[in-house]
Structure formats: C-alpha cells, structure tokens
Length: 401
Picture 1 (tube, rainbow, N blue to C red):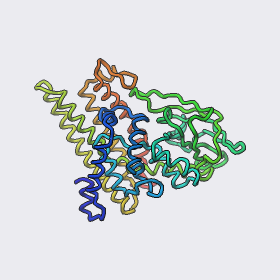
Picture 2 (cartoon, rainbow, N blue to C red):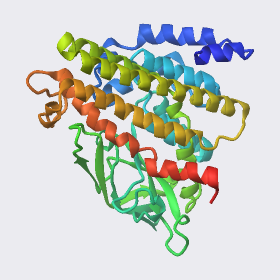
Picture 3 (cartoon, rainbow, N blue to C red):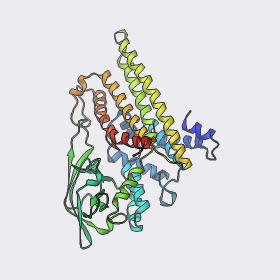
C-alpha cells in the first residue's frame, strides 16, 4: 500500500491522492529534461541545474515544503512533504538543495533575528544564494564539540581563524554557516557560536579534497583572520551548540523516502537483464536477479518503517530509534545496489575509472558512471551520522545509558 493509500484510508480530511496527482503533474511538465537526465544518468549535480530547479519550484510557490506559510513556505504537513519528495525521486527530479532549505533555513526561522530573516530567507527560497556547512575539522568530526576554530571579538567584528574540512559544495557556495569557539574556559559544548560567513571574505581559502569517485564534492576551508560582523551570529553568542543540534535534528526523516532506492533498483535490474543475456550468463543473471528480489523486500520494509515514523510525527508522538534504523538500512541498500551493478559491468571498470567528472573510459560513459556511483555510495555509511554513531543511538534507546 502506498503512502497515499494509507493516508486516504485513514480518513484524513486532506485528499492526499489528489495532492500526489497535482505534484506528479507539475514535476512531469516543469522539471527540465536536461536536469532529469542528470539524475537518471547518476551524474553529479552542481549548482546551476539545482538552482534552476529551485527557481521553478519557487515560482510555483513550492520553494520550501518544510517552512511555514508566513515565511514563504508551503505549510505542508509531514506526509505531504514525504509525498512531494517521493514524487520527485520517482520522476528523476533532484531533491531540493538541503543546506539552505533544510539546514540553516529552519535555524534562522527559529533563532535568527528579524534582520537575518529578512536578509537570508528570501535568497534561500528562490535559490539565488548557496550555502555550505562549516562544522567538521581535522580533529573534530564525530566529536564536534572539540572544534578549535576560534572567533575573537575586535570592535564590532569577530576575527575567525581555523580550518574546516569535508565541507561539501564550498567551491560553489556564497555563504557558510559555521560553528566556532568564542569562549575557552567552560565545558566543550559551551562557548561555541554559530556564525554566517560570506565565502568571498578576505582570508578564506578553499581547497578541493579529491575523493575516490572522481567527483568534486568536498573541500578544506582555511580561515585566516576572517572578519565577520557581530550581527552575523545566529542567536546568542556561546550557545551555538544548541543551534547546531537543532539543525541536525531536522534531518530525521530523510531516509523514510525510498523513491531513490526504488529508482536505483529498477536501473540495476535493467542493467542485469540487458547486459547478461543468453545462456552463457543464465546462472549469473538469475543469481543477481534473485539478490535484487531480496533487496526489493528490504526496501519495502524501509518504506513501511518510514511510514510508521511519519505517522508518529503527524500525531506528535515521540520518535526514538526509527530514524537511525532507517539511515543504517538505507545506506547499506544503496551500497548493495551499486555493488550488484559493478558485478555486471566488470571489476576491471573500477581500476580504469577516470579521475575527472564527465569523463569516460573506452568511450563507455555508462560504465564510468556506475563505477563512480559505486565509490560514492561508500560514504553513505559515514555522512549524516556514521553507522557507528547510529548503532550507539539505537543501543542507548534499547538498553539505556
């Protein structure tokens, strides 16, 4: 049973089936073909197509599905947001860029000043300004509270010095929301502030971190006496840990969307059936197709748990270990799918994979993209909370501290 069917049968006043049809009709008619092809091919999404799609959604009035109406959002409930994201995935439309809409936007809505809301929310909505996240540091990843980037007050400015790492999209961002230490003589979770830092500020250097997939996702960001106005501090100084935790809590239900998993499953199944033809490949083909049946069943289970979690959110009931379980299983399923694809295109494809975006080997772009997606899928068990972190969350919920 689909999310729409479950919602309709529950007796809700809102016609979720009609809502789904409206979203499907709009995205099929308005999501540009070239953008959908990027998603379908499994290529890296960059700012230009992403911002173009955001502008289209903004003109429709759907720029921020998770924001309240009074700030330019749709005011949709949790299930409507889930249906919207699922329909995007099912139609090869990219998800909306997360750093502005789902990360810093809600923080500014909740804790930002009136001036900050007026300055930053409109350009997040229309996609004209791009954000990145300055959290992780070389020695402060999972233990983020140990961060060492410092901000000292000089007059009406902070002077920021330090280094951030694994900063995705820093090479194309206009602004970075950044956790910095503003007080030393306190426990490490205190004395942290959340600053908005323009990426064109003097003293900022961005250096790419080249990853095994050949794509340019992440960067090192060096801050050398970067001057930031005091009014760019979100909320109270020294209370940034609270705002950082609030930001991370907004991402709890992302893994409930199985649309991308189902699209990947369909493509891997098609790859098996078209590449492994004839009697010579019969046993291998049947073995891989059987494996995909098992993956399909697991995707269905993830979807069922996702719907259960959305139902809890709709009722206002506590959400405990479900998001961690969804993240764990979804990440592994993406990896299983790309591993299956790699078995089809051949193990030698990875060894000969190009180290640049939009390049192929032996003229075979399809094989190159599968190889790049295989390597990229490795990071799914790390970002957004590593497997180890998620398992600890689940263990604490079951067994207590």
